Image 1 (cartoon, rainbow, N blue to C red):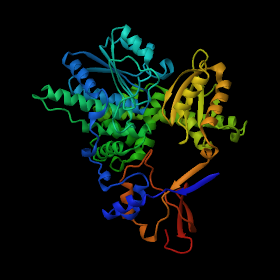
Image 2: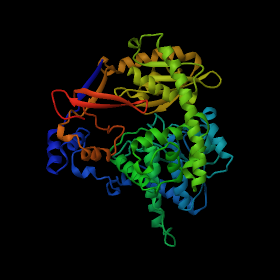
Image 3: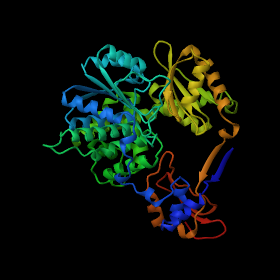
Image 4: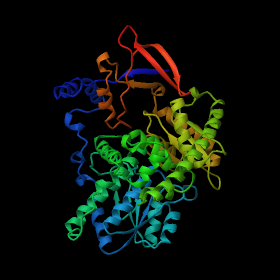
Length: 523
């Protein structure tokens, strides 16, 4: 059953915005998403949250400043998705601009898995770093940090994933989701956390007189990377994230963006001047992610840090080719998954786990997302790993916190899951192949214990109907100019219309002429 409902409107908040002369439809849309004042619409950097309350940020700034002054060797350990790639690129560019000796390593996901594992630490140790800096990973890397300590390497963790029961014994951890952190926004992406680390580092270096003889770097110049990683990682676009994204998009539209980002837009046939959240999430993000899914994310990072147009365009074309290959693999996997679904009644499964030996590890997350959309149930898709291991990637529905559900499965069945981690909406895990059937039953049982049958109903929220006077370019432009995304969805309106005319344009597009049921002007 698919239910369509109108979003509730807080009346007092609506009155407040109307009194401040906000367009009635815009005001209605915004208050339904938690906006209470006109000031909250200001997307300038003046409204960015101050870093003061982020736990350990001051200490991190001091450690990094000391490392720069002492010419210590820094090595960034990146994750293999868009968030990890943009966080790595941001760290490289900004740290180098502040005088650091810094390089990066991005582990091949198929050989080393996720996070700062002992194997990755030993690989990184070949570069003889003094410090390892994790971006978008590390909060669960207890064994990896232990191995780094054994090898005499300090570890600095920057992450945004939810911590487990035990924190790694790192030299410093910055993560807004760790216990005791009072930073108001808990939805920063990994690249957002890195941005705040760099803000604090610059402040620390400024206090030490580092920039007395040379201009200090303007971190706002790299907000295009922050915006891309934030949108592509599908974190909630709270007030603070919308400031970061808006500022990044503004720079892209003004062609003041990284050559790699502009090149990726060009190979996709998109105009940077009209770039928006859609381009970040559905044009740039998939092309970057294709490198991590099918090949090596260093290709994506090199594209993002490229200094000249020719290099950026060459790398962007390679990423575009990988993305076309990824789409082809995904299409075949989805056909295979639908065959699996034909073998059971989805109504009998509340939590769905699927496995096929032919599936590609790099694409199972996308597959899980597609099946989740089809069934409106939490879905985990597994692919074969090495030595009898299965790698799983899951996507959830709003009513279920997926990482917490996996934590519960792990506690009820201690020997079933090797490793897991993630967010409310997405998570990854590995299990022994022999445990797949048992895990599928345990996952379904756990989901049943956490959800109510009504949670499995698909629900579409809308912003009500529009009057004839609201069908205007001015309103459309006002709405299009805002940052919409995860947790702050673009407006959707509803009404009943009669199709007066229809024709196919260009062989694949439909052009309609509509009239509101019961009268009204043509649309």
